Each structure stands twice: as structure tokens, then as C-alpha cells.
Image (tube, rainbow over all chains, first blue to last red):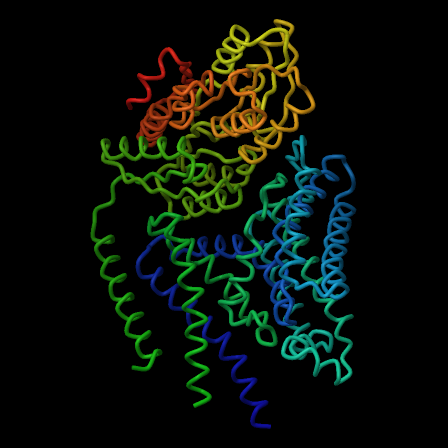
Length: 314
Length: 310
């Protein structure tokens, strides 16, 4: 009874801390920069957060279940060039999107299958996959000019309303998945202690497959939004984005060792990163310093978290 | 002391400092502010261009906001552009990492009336007030002519190019190809996506596949240097003519050492300075030409010392 309450409190508190950080960062920028205060700026920030946000929701589920997927950045590039190629060949927009999402989900599944089947650590499996997929993306994209897509496709990433709605739907789903659906809820059990979960009758392997597939699907969706947003596709997309997605999840309180975290925290983490980079731009501080700041915040967030938990336990 | 308490004190200090700094920023009077968005912060070509632009802005008394993303990244560049619009800067200079990513953002700039000048890479959009660019096609013809005159014949020429569909890379490829094919020399073209690693691999592979390659044109100097490394690995240094493009310091050294034959130096200092001048002119309501071509300068062993001194 008591430990359940404590656990719930802790989970909320982790997200709460990230929200506090987000508010604090925003107060600083709101005070300092007159141009940061406009509505348009926040539309801008949300629009910029969509691609990373969609990807990070998948990474969060994988992390909570004790897994890790480093291949999603390369997967994004591969799906972008595949969908771009199909669009350039004149296939129907819905068909291109469905194909892209199916392939992405399939590759996510493959990650899961290899991890479960071989027992090679997910770090290694997905690191290898990251290189494989980047190479495939380059092969598919080689020598093609994938540019200027139909409007019915571009709408998915253009402006503010549509991409942000997609992201909102993604988070509504992943939040429900993790808190209300059995398959999602079990991710915490599996991430916390897979052996105990298995003994309790949870179908650990089957579910882990589902989580990796979900991670792949989200990377595919992110690829589609990004391709629509930039109106061109390139095999150079998404480099390092898998690490940004993990960083966002960590800032939002998800544990790299599994069992702890949530979708709410991750979206806040994504917004922390986006606000920081937009706000520092507004203050005229260059991109290299933005990287420094985000790096410091990641460590700070986890440190605060650890310090807080120690206090609660005392 | 409790770690958390310590952290609170530190955060508090940072907050106070930022507020004070901000008040100072707010108190200052508002001159013209221009945003500069280069392709990246880690290539010598772009560093020189940015510093020249910054210098010129200083001379003109204009605020210079550098929003360049660290690496070639179309998404980050589009975000930087949108952030600049949001800040309602008076004008934007854009050196596009990819000229295809900006339709949407330029439409917004047009709606907001914020003028945009492009440097180095052309962007096909009516709102671009002016383009300052090395005349890539004409300058590449100079490189093509040089290769034609100095290469061993008969032989094939390998072109290690940029990203297919990228305007700059295509123009350089076309300039060289045009001259060579007119003279009946066979040209092999491979796109290396501006990646030296790829340029290296492509060169190795093509040298294996076509032993009759006697000259290589790298569409940008880091690519040409990567090709040089591959040629060296095959033990063919000195036998294969290597010509680059950009005039980077490393390429000049290679020319001095006789490892590379020539490069076309882009006048990126003039590019940066002209870009700023044009943008300020547009902001002040003056008429400006739509296109300012800048001619490349051929550098080979004969004149490399002049440029090495700089």
C-alpha cells in the first residue's frame, strides 16, 4: 500500500520536476527576450518539437521496458527516402504513407526479434542496425533528387496545426498505452525486473517485440512529418536524433535502466530542449552554446532527480 | 551541505545574472539587426565567410546575429530560419545547406516583409532579394580547362561531386563535364553528398574499377583531399592529376607539396561582405541586382605562395 503510493508520487514527481524546469526556462526567456513573448513563437516551438517529439515517444516506451533503440535516427532517414522515392514515382499519397509506416514497424520488429532471439545486448544490436539502415538509406537515396511533393502530403508537416495535432495524438496514445493498457503497463514490470515479470505470467518476449515495433512505427511517423515539413528527402536526415530522443526522455524522468518513466515527462523533455534552443537563438547565443546548455541540463536533470529521491527515502 | 540546497543557490545566482544581463540588452537602443544563417560552423569555407560578414556588419554598425547550426543539417537550418523570423530581425542572410528546404519559411518571410539574401547557394524562390555566389559553372569551366591541359591522355576523369540536385554541386560538375566532353574525354561522375568519407570510398572503388582514370575533380576541397588520400593509398600519387574547388588552407598546402595540382579559390571574403552590404541596402530601400556572380581564382603550384601567406 505505502510503496504503491510512494511509487505513484515518484512517477508524478519526476514529470513534475521537468515541468518545473520548463517553466523556469520559459520565465527566464520571457523576461529577457521581447520577441520570445509572442504567440507565434510558441507555435514555432511546438512545430519544431514535432519530429523529435514523435520519435521520443517511441524511445520512451522502449526505454521503460528496459530496452534501447539507437537505430531510430537512421530508420527515420531510410523511411524518408523510401517515402520520398514512392512519392516521386507518383504513387497515391496514402499508399506511400502506409508503406513507410509498415516498413518502419517491420524494422522495429526486426530489432526486437534479434535482441530477443540472439541475446545480444540491445545497445549492440541497434548500434549495428543504425549503420545498416543508414547505409540502406544512402543506397535508396543515391542519385535521386527527392524534392517537391504533392500538397496533400506536405500538409502533414506544414505550418503548425497539423503536425502539432499529430504529435498530440501520439502522446495521447502513448500516455494511455503506458497507464491504461495492459500491454503498456507491463513495460514497467518488464523494465523493472524481467524475470519477476515472467514468473508473474507476463509474456515478456512477445511484449518486448511490441515495444520495439512501436519505436519503429514512431520513427517512421517522424520521418513522414519531417519529409513533409522540409518538402524534400535525404539520407542525411536524423543524424544523432536517436540520442536527442533518449536525452528528452531522460530529462523527462525516464530511467535508462528501465522500469521508470512516462510519456508526459518525455514531451516536457522535448519542449525543454526546443525552448532552450529557440530561446538562446532569440538572445543571439550561437548554436554551439545551445549544445553546451542542453548537455549541462541533461546531467543536471538526472542529478536533481537522484538528490530528490535520496531525500524522499530518508 | 545538502546537494539540493547547493543546486538551488547556484540556479538562483544564474537566474539573477541572466535577468541583469537581459536588462542591459533591453536598455540598449535598437539598431538594424540582421540574422546570419550559414550552412555549418565546422567547415573552413563557412567560417571565413561568416567572419567576413561579421566584420562588414561591424563596419556598417549593424547588429549581427549568428544562428548557424553546428553541422550540415537542413532541419536545424530551417528551425534557425524560423527562429530568426520570429525575432523579427530586419533581414536574413542564408547560406543554405540544402536549397530545397526553405519554400515554406520563405513564404512566411515574404508575408512578414523580412528581406532575405542568399550567399553561396542559390534558392529558387521569388522572395530572395539577391544571390551572391561564386559563378560555379564558369569557374568550374576554368577547372575543366586546366584538367584538359594537364591530364595524361588518353584517360578518364573522375568527378567526385556533392549532393545530386544541390545547385552548387551540380553547376561545378556541369562546368567541368562540359569542357571535357567537348574535347572527347570520358567523364565518370559519382555523388559523394559533400562527405569526405564517401569521397574517399568512391575514389578507391572507382580507381579499382577504372585503372585508366588519370585525373580527378573534387567538387569541394575536403572531397578532393579525401580523393587524394585514396590515390595515395593506391600508390598513385603524382600519377593522377587532382583538382579541387574552394581554396581551403589544407588544399593549398597539398598543392604546395605537389600532392594536388590545383584548386579554384572561392572568394568567400567578398561573398560575406557583399552579402551584408546588399542586405543592408535592401533594408534601407535601395534597389539591388538579383544576382552578383563572383569569379573563382585558379590556384596551382605557380601562384600558391601568394595565397598561403594570407
